[in-house]
Length: 73
Image 1 (cartoon, rainbow, N blue to C red):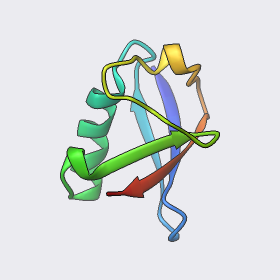
Image 2 (tube, rainbow, N blue to C red; image 1 turned 45 degrees about the horizontal axis):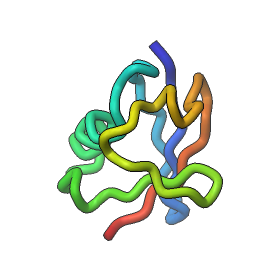
Image 3 (tube, helix red, strand yellow; image 1 turned 135 degrees about the vertical axis):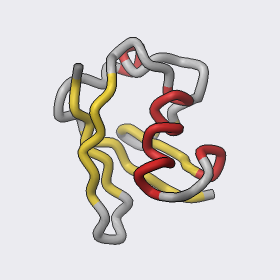
Image 4 (cartoon, helix red, strand yellow; image 1 turned 180 degrees about the vertical axis):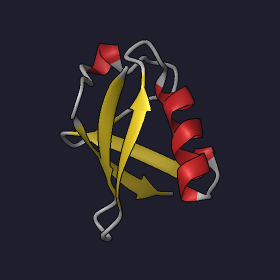
Protein backbone atom coordinates (compact mmCIF):
# COMPACT_ATOMS: atom_id res chain seq x y z
CA UNK A 1 0.00 0.00 0.00
CA UNK A 2 1.35 3.40 -1.00
CA UNK A 3 0.17 6.97 -0.46
CA UNK A 4 0.17 9.31 -3.45
CA UNK A 5 -0.04 13.09 -3.09
CA UNK A 6 -2.40 14.78 -5.54
CA UNK A 7 -2.33 18.56 -6.03
CA UNK A 8 -4.89 20.40 -8.17
CA UNK A 9 -2.97 23.72 -7.91
CA UNK A 10 -6.14 25.43 -6.67
CA UNK A 11 -5.35 24.76 -3.03
CA UNK A 12 -6.70 21.22 -2.79
CA UNK A 13 -4.13 18.60 -1.81
CA UNK A 14 -5.13 15.00 -1.23
CA UNK A 15 -3.35 11.90 0.05
CA UNK A 16 -4.75 8.82 -1.67
CA UNK A 17 -3.95 5.25 -0.65
CA UNK A 18 -3.60 2.72 -3.46
CA UNK A 19 -1.43 -0.11 -4.77
CA UNK A 20 1.38 0.23 -7.32
CA UNK A 21 -0.39 -2.47 -9.36
CA UNK A 22 -3.55 -0.34 -9.70
CA UNK A 23 -4.19 1.13 -13.11
CA UNK A 24 -4.42 4.90 -13.53
CA UNK A 25 -8.12 4.43 -14.39
CA UNK A 26 -8.76 2.63 -11.09
CA UNK A 27 -6.85 5.36 -9.24
CA UNK A 28 -9.03 8.01 -10.90
CA UNK A 29 -12.16 6.18 -9.69
CA UNK A 30 -10.91 6.29 -6.08
CA UNK A 31 -9.95 9.94 -6.51
CA UNK A 32 -13.32 10.85 -8.03
CA UNK A 33 -15.13 9.54 -4.93
CA UNK A 34 -13.06 11.86 -2.74
CA UNK A 35 -13.47 14.83 -5.09
CA UNK A 36 -17.12 14.30 -5.99
CA UNK A 37 -16.65 14.44 -9.76
CA UNK A 38 -16.64 12.00 -12.66
CA UNK A 39 -13.45 9.94 -13.24
CA UNK A 40 -13.48 10.75 -16.97
CA UNK A 41 -13.18 14.48 -16.10
CA UNK A 42 -9.88 13.94 -14.22
CA UNK A 43 -6.51 14.33 -15.95
CA UNK A 44 -3.40 13.29 -14.01
CA UNK A 45 0.11 14.39 -14.91
CA UNK A 46 3.52 13.48 -13.59
CA UNK A 47 6.40 15.66 -14.69
CA UNK A 48 4.34 17.18 -17.49
CA UNK A 49 3.33 13.80 -18.98
CA UNK A 50 -0.35 12.84 -19.05
CA UNK A 51 -0.98 9.44 -17.43
CA UNK A 52 -3.04 7.01 -19.54
CA UNK A 53 -5.84 5.04 -17.88
CA UNK A 54 -4.83 1.50 -18.91
CA UNK A 55 -1.23 1.68 -17.58
CA UNK A 56 -0.42 0.80 -13.96
CA UNK A 57 0.93 3.33 -11.48
CA UNK A 58 4.07 1.21 -11.02
CA UNK A 59 4.83 1.45 -14.74
CA UNK A 60 4.82 5.24 -14.36
CA UNK A 61 7.17 4.86 -11.37
CA UNK A 62 4.57 6.19 -8.95
CA UNK A 63 5.77 5.18 -5.47
CA UNK A 64 5.05 6.22 -1.89
CA UNK A 65 4.77 10.04 -1.52
CA UNK A 66 4.93 10.68 -5.28
CA UNK A 67 3.36 14.00 -6.32
CA UNK A 68 0.84 14.04 -9.17
CA UNK A 69 -0.77 17.11 -10.72
CA UNK A 70 -4.56 17.05 -11.07
CA UNK A 71 -6.40 18.88 -13.84
CA UNK A 72 -10.06 18.86 -14.85
CA UNK A 73 -11.11 18.40 -18.47
